Length: 82
Image (cartoon, rainbow, N blue to C red):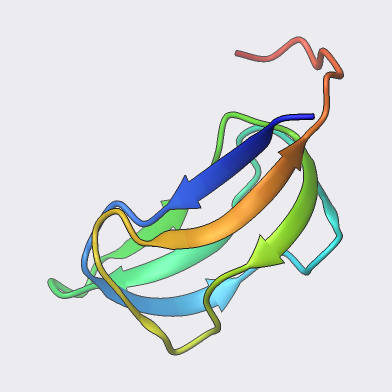
């Protein structure tokens, strides 16, 4: 079983979390919305599907580039999207 890591790409504040602990996610599904220091909203997605192992941030948290947002327990289902 592999684990994927969802990282913040920018400085900002977590505006919205679209997933919950132990929920199933799919490739390219919006997971987080981060409002950057410049005022833009960055939608965070991942290229893996699986189950949310743990959320490492909450709405309102400040984030920096490379900060872990969530760990995903990857599944091996082939979904057909790249």
